[in-house]
Image (cartoon, rainbow, N blue to C red):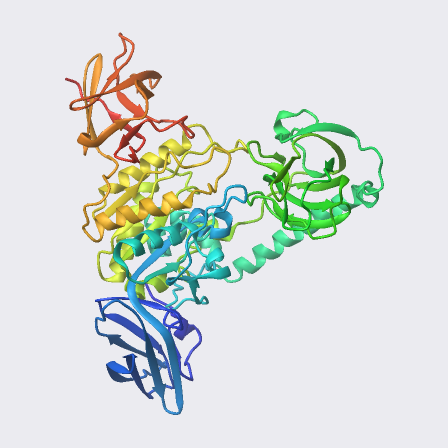
Length: 636
């Protein structure tokens, strides 16, 4: 494949520059060579000096090529909390990088659950926050979709290093921070994170055209998306589509202009609820107002932080309290947590108004979330009866093209630049967007093989298996997440990989479960075993043999540390030759687990926790859950 690097795209560079990840507060991998590159005037002599506490560690020079590009290698440097200074000079120009540390450097990637920032993981009703640590640092790469046939950047197109303190900590990857925090506690060295995660990005978004075309099913799309102007034309088409939809809805809306003065609305409903469950709203797209009057008692504290929690809504909302706008969210996933400014609330009767915009006929208020006002220690429940008024009904709005969810989109600017970094490991949390679970093992294997080939070494890969989840919008088919979890389990056949099991720490009603501390901790345990060779925490069993007739014996790796959370275990099932599933029970035995089921069934396969959202994980290896699985039954 012909590469089009950032330097070649901009023709001949002039002036001194250095790769973006080598910048103030950066972290480079310790005890290993690190390639440093940048630009200068063509043919110019470039000098580089690395020092720590005034002692020179490295000095070198090179000459910029005809396109202005230069590169040098730093020798291995030991890990230390003492900052280094890197000076690069060419002619009259000089660049100085300060507070540069050497430690362990990880590429963290995937989709939204790796991208999810720390502040989104904090439950305001039960706060759990990571410790501040200026030696844990993240380089967040801005999401940059690209679709060039042979486009490939050598450097990231933006981003900067941030230390895990104060507000920057709140914006860092939650899973990444807890991963780094666990490793820091184990090894006491700086931990750097290169974060290229992008919400909704399937694994095929990280692959180049040449590999995608080898699969034989992406050609027509690639022919379309690689045409010049594809993104611009698509964006404009979607923008115009939404403009016309909103214009049409506004022309139908005769309520919103007087909503604050209406005494009575059209009817009443119970919040939370899903539109599909109520014939008045089933299939509705358009705009609806919801109103609730509530009372704040005289002993409530209103002179401090006051939080309005309105769960999660589909799709977009604007919220008013006593006529004052207090917040808005433009899409379905984020929790609706709105701070109420001082002076808005009053003792006695207050009113909250929600304008909900439903675009694709599947609106609602997610059940199982908090709908309340928190004033100090006082919680005022806002669930229950609300008034509503349908302001305008509109046709179904076809969703916009989501660029980062498309094949190829995350390759050139988000993935290719990492090939030039020396990372300790790749930490991967992704698969929610891969409904094509049949193809996932081959796609992920192609990604890992390509990544390692381009990096030039067999980088260790630790990935998170998807947790339990039951889509509140009803959009995920039955057993689809069972199949993708099984596809992920099969990826352990790739050498140099490890998988963490998270089937017990998801949230049934949230694609983005808050518990990222256990996710990060388990990723760190797996990294310690795979990368550093430490004997820590029993690995959750991921392989098994199933034999028997009438009663099955399930033998697992690390079977000596198995534990059952209840007896008998109900999470098992057997399937017969017709593919029909039958319940089974499991009991621990000396050699593993004995699984029993009704007589007369000839089992073809054994399943464990084979549901999108199983009730509970029952079988553990130490303190870690055993992975869900589907295994063939070998005849005796």
